Image (cartoon, rainbow, N blue to C red):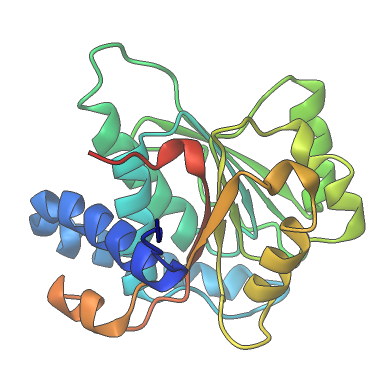
Length: 237
């Protein structure tokens, strides 16, 4: 018998359509989140290293991811002015309002180049910053505290020292988010390096959402966020 082959592009479209459809119930919150992103642009004046940040389409996709999966703990590589942090936190907050049992949710975020203070709490989500600290230092501290991340958002290039510790702070259900997944950018390099690890054999790559799918959901800018999702989280009904 010939099996039905579903390639990554088709699977990616199904996944993103599901996440964005689920988030569409919060479409009235888009203006609020967009205004939050605009306010965080003012933090650039405090940057020692001023670099790029995510467009609103990526912020809404971050919101869609955390609102759908409802994580308790996120580790983030690359805080900068906190736009990704805030979009992830807002999705966590909205998801937490659906919880029957309330749990304390937190984001651990590091920035090797900057020490910009983005606040210790957002919408009841605790935010612990590792200012002027490397991702390896953050992962080591999380390992010492026995903290495991449900989602790891990577907006920076992982080094060899990261792979010595990052898999000590994940579980079989941890999702990796990869910013700048295009061409030869860091997101592609991070995906390649992650998939060389034996523990990633039961994961699949979800490409960034296509432009027509973003347009369908009222998003005019591109999004270059890819995901590495454990196959245990993909079910057929």
